Length: 452
Ligand SMILES: Cc1ncc(COP(=O)(O)O)c(C=O)c1O
Image (cartoon, rainbow, N blue to C red; front, side, top):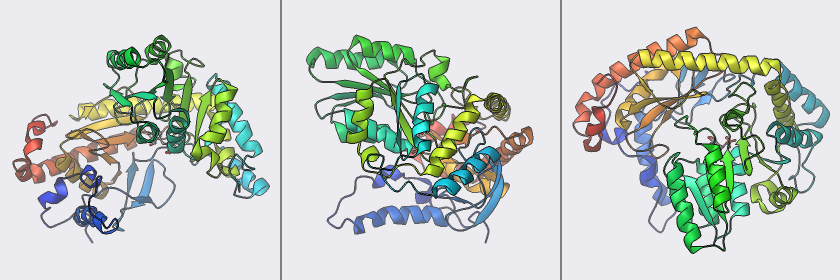
């Protein structure tokens, strides 16, 4: 079966978004999701649904995969998040095997009961030390950590002031905790200050949590963390920074933007994920107060009521931290940054718009969703594994490929992906031309598309 559809792609498959099916109406809660399924399946049938793929081998720099239609493809992989290439590192595999031999495969309990292991306790210490914080608490995933820390600490009368582009776990945690959620302009300290001043002018009683990320996962940019922390001091607020994407892999010592901005140990609360750099599911919250640590253990539902990380996961992450802190880790970060810079340069030379700052996330703008879907449908055939991100994960008309770079990528991988993306883009642009006129909101953005 050909990967790409040979029939004409219907307009419906190139328009609409997941957002259209979020607020459902109707008395039958199972039947009403059918509308979404019809739209999704139309996209799937026309090969413009590039989601829910499966790898058929380790997610290395070149990798075989399967679309959710079952079609197989293989190619250079810029879609997996394994920034330091630790997922297949021999020492990590050895650590996992040793943990299995010693402990079996399961922690068999929540951390509140008897789910901790010697590995998880050592890991909490390791994270806290690495971040210059006093304490750390583990969570089953980074998502659970983000959601769980906000929901645990914020009460309905409190306020959350957060960057408008914060990750889903932070937004959902805030929405679950309070109706007083104030989104400030992306990276905009003045906007955050206006919100804080307005809140404090009328509410001196309740608490405020300010939330941001050290590296934004779709835009690859960073806020002024010290300025946010200063604002928090000025307005009696508390700062939470999510460092999921840069911890371990960015900066000479791997301490990410918190380190680069000289804020080690100085941010009120830091949370993160192991799934990008540390070769495992899992997340954490780090803080400086034993009271906060203990409170999270008993009032943060995903920590308290979810089974603890398995001994294998904890041993993997512990070993990953050892590598991150070592000379090898330093060398891997240097290789990673070399790849990032080379990829960004090559993409720009090929005429693509690349946004953000150099990091393991390289956003390549396609802008118009329909065109982006057509580009994405061609990439597997050309031997590229890459993730398309579209509205509502990013703003309308700003669809992009989020390339994720690994330390073990090489120049040939980068050269291949850029040439293949250019071919896919050129072909897709031709195919998309007749649709451009039909998609009204897109037509303005079309002019801005590279190569158009
Ligand atoms: C900024 C940010 N925070 C948290 C998470 C959640 O991490 P995990 O994959 O460990 O659940 C992600 C993952 O996509 C993320 O991008």
